[in-house]
Length: 526
Image (cartoon, rainbow, N blue to C red; front, side):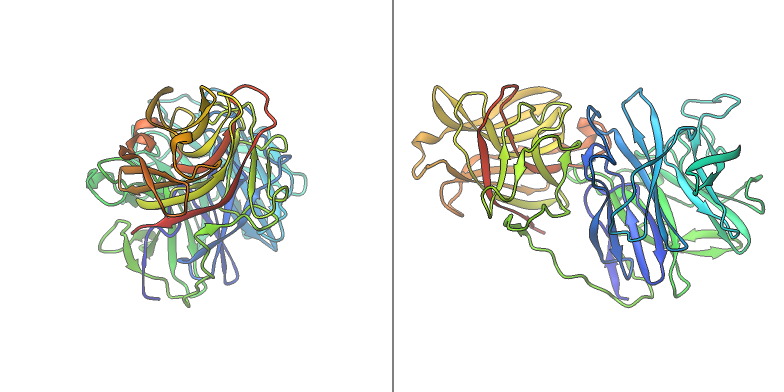
């Protein structure tokens, strides 16, 4: 294959895990407080991926009610064994609440997946599964060392057999390894492999920020002792500084192709406009080889690059996806997400065919709740979004429009509401929970206003501009060159990337009103 360009899955798709079934590759990522949970992708060549659905796409599988921002579903792992796919993950209830691990199964990775099988005696986060040569299955995750932590965030990897017929852990727990980089902290994301008769335990260390890294150890016995690779970390970018194209590389999983090559998927971020990462943590691909029984990542370079030589596999492109959703299907496309598990009949594609109807719920996009919202990830540094909305606010508490959302406290909303019995369009910046009206336009004075409004956001790097109009492509500026850095986790905190979405709210009140959206278009500008 010719050169390919990283990331292979751009935008907020972190913590990738991969498996191969014959000539097909499947990949899952974290989804946090968004629903459906755990997007799943399919590839034939490791470079070109198409989303085939979500693993957790039924409310009975995933109850995200009350889940804070950047909590929820962490670090899924996907494995394939004897005709069955397994996905195991952690549900993080809150900042201080329980971390609960569970897995689901499917014969077809496109679904349907089973209801969760909970593992109440599986501590820690980032669980993974390993099937040994004898068919026995083992579960692993991280935990505080039984002897106590020797430094802040000191963790170890534990392992225990999983009886997949009974859906429960059996036998003793074993302490495998507490990492290669003492004092670096946060040993997590374990994946276990058996290669040429040796067991290899690959983990993430250093936290998921700038000091993120991948380390590895090996043992002749499943339960250890595990030998630390003297070349650790086998992959990191922290030594490169912050002024580089790709940062915070880590949390990797490996796969061998049918042609014998070895490849690794990992997360990383592309900062822009300074050290700001609006796109979140993305999925990257990098090759490695084996030397003296240890992996050497991207030999001669040792890092993940934006352009690399592709795998020795036939190139396989999928049909391109349309940039514009005209809402003419019976179901929402896989690109769309809700904030938390959707509750109530607040959206419809059938009440007005060819439109997405969002009913006004009392919940706001600033609440830790399930608002009337659908959104998609920002996947490019330079992009344009267009939509057209029909909405007539009946009261000052009624609002609908377009939102750029990092979390409940950091966002931009271009919304139509009412003031003094007149419809107005506002751009609101929400930063740290405090709101500022950046611009305002009274719509009764806008030529051609008939409850139908075109809305556009255009971003060039960290410069975001907002436009409106009463006719297609006849744009009036609402606010130009607005600071986009508040949409970065470097300002807002947390682990997610920017979402762009449509919303409607009655702001704490009950309402029978609704907003109709004819189409939504997302276009990369570079």
